[in-house]
Image (cartoon, rainbow, N blue to C red):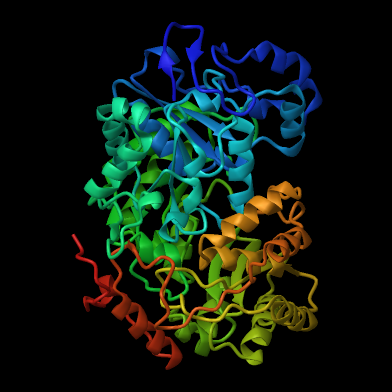
Length: 608
């Protein structure tokens, strides 16, 4: 945070290798001496079509949106794009972006003493009023630490003085904030579109106090607001309620940014629905993003038309936790097909149910091209699917795959989990047997050139779910389960992919850990850890050594009755409901979808 003097220099506290009266970043130096020698220099240049570059010195408040992964992944994140639009559409506010530099860029920046800078105006991150991190995945923790170090900002909130930006966080991981809490001045749970604007307005009203007495300003914020979490002032008995809006943000006010290079999801993305009432017992997003809310069809069509027209994309993806559950999905698909099929623009529907209705929908909007279709049975047997509250039979899965092959799809992706509660060897082996049956039945039906991709992730108990108290499988237990599946699958048309057990185990330490885990993360960064969410960068031995040297036990066990590290975070779901669902899981008893059945599940939320 800075006091603006003129349009060239700024008076800041000495932070890291920044100095008082330091001018703006000399980006010519970066272009000449760094970018020619790093991989994909376009990650760092900004200037994309439709990006918003407001004069930095004219905004009343400058926010830097920080995403702790590389450009290609961060630019695919719709949440960050929505916040970028919301802030830049507010008069007097400015939002710029920064992504985690790749390892080669980090090395060059440290050698040349170049501070982490924003893409829009090439401003050192330490000059902003507020830096907001998006916490979407637990293992991004090392990248967050690296980014703060590159910015010259102390990693721990307690070490920052007046004049340093306020470091805030939002995203799914804020629902279990304690492993990251000592980093952040403020954490904002729940929906972020309005909450970020409310926070920035608070900042504007209290700027003088923040500049003169940071500690007092944060203490006042904590005392006055139950919708933000100020970790330095954790008040005993106080509940932090998530931010939730009755309507989800229609992202049609601002233009879609066209990336400089191909991104992970290289398409226009339009959110159609938020929240889910299916009640899968392992699913954290299905719990914490309740209640279920929909955009109206007119807004979806307008947003799609604008994003396609201004980006040149030839595909649009409709985003939700379960696209087939959107109440007007048939009518929406008809209108999208009428508007875009003649223009050779395809529409993809991720998160589809495994049934003929959803396949017909996908067929209707994908006539221009058919890449792959994705279903998520999650478990190998009907018994275990009832445990996780997924009412899906083997016959329905097989018939849905055959129907998809009949409709012209050549590739089907199936997602399963290993290590679920109440799982047996039979459940694990049935994953491979089910895949073999699908291919066998497809061959009998005469389908040619088909393939099945089977992805097996590892169950990680997550906060605010009925399985938050369940045991996390050990690394060796997960390896044994993976081997059982490999030993069964013989058909070359089936491709198996298993998530790294060590990564899942470490994820579980953050998913249910306390503030000690952050100490291990800082130690791991000192030992060279970064990009731990990337399998080819992940080194579990570093983490073992970090925990060992600090004397912190690598433990994940939590039982009913234990004090939960996230117990002060109120996401609207009652503990009584979660415990009753845990009993239903043990008994293999299904809980009906409250929206479909009309029977309230008594989850604790007041539905709009």
